[in-house]
Length: 188
Image 1 (tube, rainbow, N blue to C red):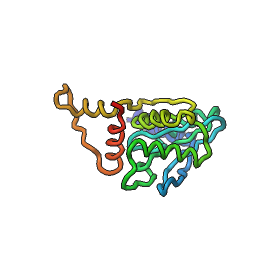
Image 2 (image 1 turned 90 degrees about the vertical axis):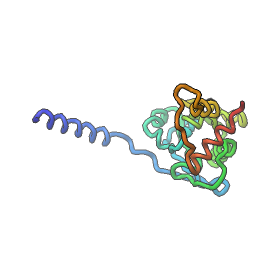
Image 3 (image 1 turned 90 degrees about the horizontal axis):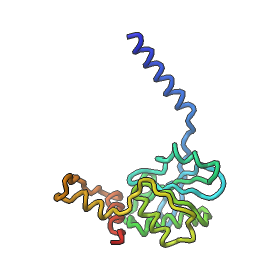
Image 4 (image 1 turned 180 degrees about the vertical axis):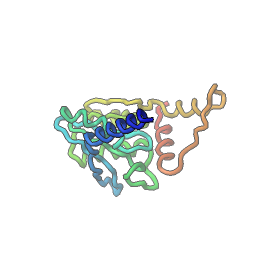
C-alpha cells in the first residue's frame, strides 16, 4: 500500500513538473476574409513560413507540441479552416476550392508571398489543390497522414461488399460540408 502511494505521488509530481516546463500554447488570433473570421496561431520564429493546416474537426492548436520545434529555422503559423474551432461557421463555403481561397487570402493578409504547407488529414486535399492553383506561392508540401483520395476512401469504407464496411455517417453542419467538399474535389 505504501509503495502504491509513493508511486502515485511520484507520477503526480512528474506530471506537474512536465506541465510546468511545457511552453504555453500561443494565443488565438484572427483574420477576417470576405466577412469570415478565421482563427490562426503564431508560434514565432524567423525565416521561411511553415504553415500548419489543421485536420478534420480540429484546430491549429493540435500542433502546439510539434510546431515550436521548428521556430529555430522557420516562422511557424497554424491555420484553422472555416467551420472548425473558433473560426466562423458560415452557412456555405466548405468546398475545397473555397477553403483553398481562404488559405491564399490568409497568406495575402499576413503579407506572406510563399510558404511550406504542412497538411494533416483532409488538409492534404487542400494543400494539393493550393499548390496546383498557386504553384509560385509554395516552397514545399508536407503531408502528415493526409488524405489523398477521400472519395475512394469513403466509398471503400462504406461499401457493404467490403470485408469490413464501416458505419460512417455524414456529420452535420460545417464538418459534413467539408467532408462532402473534399470528396467532390477528388479528381477522378
